[in-house]
Image (cartoon, rainbow, N blue to C red; front, side, top):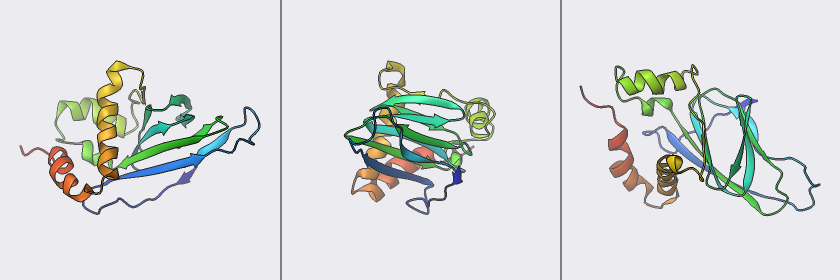
Length: 173
């Protein structure tokens, strides 16, 4: 797998959203695998959100069979890629890539020490697959769709200043 370097969309907030649309050719043989995301890794967290179509997302020796509306959390430094066996139509997805430090609110916070840091340091995998068909996954998927919508909007800079940054700044202690 190749190490990927991509700049963030702003210098002041370490988060980027990348959209990919892969149009499929019906001449592919039945059952053939078509790569839609090349094998790569990076220092950031990557949340893969499948907007359209179906694919298999591979990370850490696991294959996740995704349908439109599903997402997968990929911790830093793990190789990941995706393929489809779909022969027609499109596979469209977003990669929400961000610096892990935006999840850290306080070094001594119980949530940070018990849950966030072990996942970010690769000591523990969190349940990485969020399924559109599971009601308990809906709050995460809704928040992810809001982030994607913000990046798709033409008012991103104003919205980022008023919505994202205040909620992600560390608490003063």
